[in-house]
Length: 370
Image 1 (cartoon, rainbow, N blue to C red):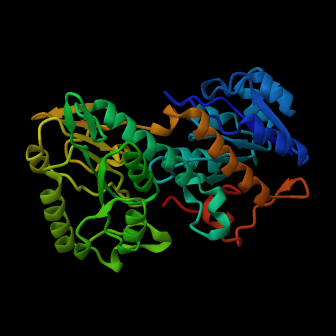
Image 2: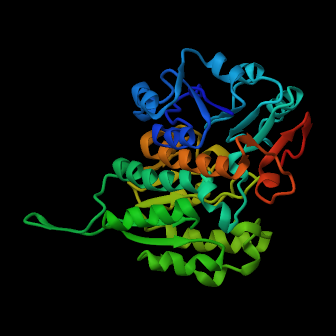
Image 3: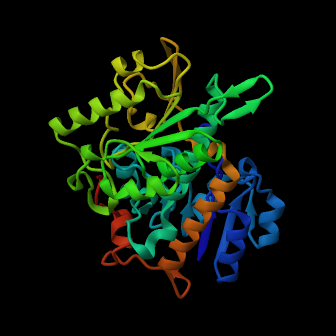
């Protein structure tokens, strides 16, 4: 079986689907791996390393896309890339099917079987395949560094000959994987950290990292959906949630927002009125910018300044840490391929709880756009 690794074509995407270390393991397992020349350059994975790992280097993407039985990517393919996939091939990547139905229909029309990496189910045996979590770890870490760089304040408490500087106050909204990593990073940098989440189950995790959990009386078990994700709140509960956030956010120096609800726009947690009440020099880092933003003022991939407050809406932070982000994603793919490949061939068992949850198109049909 041939596994193809084309170079990513999305703007500012520096990750690569498979790193040389993983390629070596797949080759040892009996798979042939085709890698487009330069595919790993953005992640500091040289062609020579792929060749040493046993990969076959291919000069152009078209030959990888047309020649592979299984094509692995980070980002969804562009329409022209999808057109080059051979009929009956398998594609594994982040797909975001609900946002790009035309692409899904194009792939189904070519009878391509697609596995969407954001649909890995929250099961114990699928944890090592969970690319959303691996990339959210990178995003949560980098979010704090970028926000700290934009802040006019130092994060740790410092006692110097010039006097004592109080530690910065960091508030994290959403204590999923990205939020917990943001908490841990801000704590390592010496900030005083607090966090809020609508799911009561995360309180213990937040406190174990040395942060305080804000307003636990505002959360409810009903706010946790299947798989541990946050659920949509009722109108009254959302109003009380906003009031609590408003009271707490006034004195914060850095605010990191990470709240997402699968398949829906990001919940609006910070209004323009809240921003106007924040202290001058405060920074809001909105990790939900691509899904509409948790802050009313967020603009995707832009920096907005309002009354002395800076609102950052970066897109694709994991791509700014391409080496480790690629290593983690590559291991996610390796585990998934080990699950799917039987006796040298990829088996699509829709009755399997992992496979069935991830397949978007198969044998010319669209199984789900949600």
